[in-house]
Image (cartoon, rainbow, N blue to C red):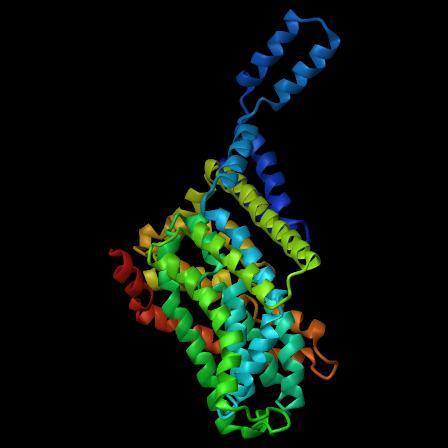
Length: 472
C-alpha cells in the first residue's frame, strides 16, 4: 500500500472504531501513535541505539537499550510536543474558566427565578410561557454553553409548567430543545473558542461574527413561537390568573432587577470586554467565573458541595477537550505526513466544485457527522480536514466557522440521534413521548437552515461587526 492509502485506512479504521463505541480521544491517540510509528520508522536511527549493545554486556542495560531502540521513533517526540502545545495554548485557557462560570450559574438557583419573572413579564404576549422559556434558555445557554445542562434543567423547570398550562407537548418540547442549543452559537460560546484553537482564527473576530447570526436565529425562534400561538391558540393557551398572577409594575421591575439583569449584565460584561478589546478572552472568562461566584453568593446558593461539584465537572470536561486536542493533533499530523490531506485535497479539486457546491458538501458532511458525534469531536477532528481547502475556494475561515456553528445546532435537533431530545426525554413526564419531541423540534430545525441560507445570501451578517470593530 502507498502512504496515502495507509492514511485513508487510518481514517476508515477510526470511523469504524467510533461507531463501535471506543473512546474517541484515546482512539485518536492510539491510531496516531500506531500509524505514526510506521510513518516515522527509521531503521538507521533505531540501530544506532542497538549498536551500543556490543559495548555493554550488562544484562539490564541490554534490556533497556533494546527498549530505547524500539522507542527511538519520532512519533513519541511528536506526541509529547503536541501535548505540550495543547497545555500551553492560551486560547484554550478560557475553556475551563467559562465552564466554571456556567456550572456555578447552573447551581445558583438563578434560572428558576429568571423563568418565573419572564413568564410574568410576558404574560400578555401570545405563547407567553413559551417566549419566557425560550429567552431563559437563550440566556442560560449563553452563560453555560453546555447543551445537556440547559435542556435538562429547563426540562425540569419549564416543561411541567407549560404542560400544566395546557401547552401542546410537541410545541413545548421543541421550544426547550431548540433554546437549549443556542449557547453553541451565541457568544461567549465555548464551541467558538475550540474552533479558534483548531483553525487559528481570532476568537474576538469569531465572537463579533457570531453575534448577528445568533440574534437572527433567536428572532426567528421567537417569531415562530408567537406566530404559531396566534394561528393555533389551542397549542399555547393564554395563562389564567391562577397560573400567572398579576404583579404590580414596581414589583415586576424589582423582580427583573434581581433575576434578569444580573445574569444579562454578567454575559454582556464578559462579551463586551472581549469585543471592545478591554480584556482577552481568558481575562474575560476569569471575570465571568468570578461574577458567577458573586451571583451564587448573592443568591445564597454557594455551598462547599456545589463549589466542589462545579470544580469537578469543570476539570472533567476540560480534560476531555484537551485530550481530544492532543489526540487530534497527533492523528492529523500523521495523516498529513502520510499524504492523506493532499489526497483529499486533490480529490475535492478534481470534482470541479464551485464555492457554493463545496460549502454545501462540507456542511452536509458536518450535518451527518452530528448524528453520532458531539460538536467538540467534529470541530477538533473533522473540521481541520476542510480548513486547508478553504483558500482553494476563496472562503474565509471566519465565515466557514459561523456556518459550522449554525450547522451544529442541527446535530442536537435531528432525529434519530437528536441528543437534546434524549436529554429532555430522560427527565420528561411519561406522557411526553419521544415522537412528540421529534415532531416539536422539526420547525426549529427548518429555521436553522433558513438562517444558514440568510448568512450565505447576506454575508455582512458575519463580516459587519468584525469589520466595524477591528477592520479588515
